[in-house]
Image (tube, rainbow, N blue to C red):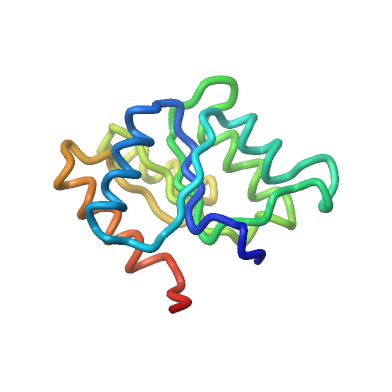
Length: 140
């Protein structure tokens, strides 16, 4: 992976959520880099491109909102899993729903995990720290 690849690619249509995650990384004094894409189709265009040479370097982890405009999270996930370039990139689906059915559906569609959107800043910091510890390779 190129050094220009982000550690986390956040795919979420909410600038507020994206800012919250960025502030949580700062508050945690994390060295993790994060790039944000605000809809599923734009994320696929960036990651897959029309050819391997046109696609962006792959992140270590994709944090994918289940509910997105243009293409929802499960549709994005299906296309990521169908492409050899992105098939092995870990994808965590997250949603405001803590329903077991939503989690089971995400896992069934190929997600590596499912997290419920945190309620506040402190919980967001804890979630980001947990994701960093569990999913990101440390290269220090």
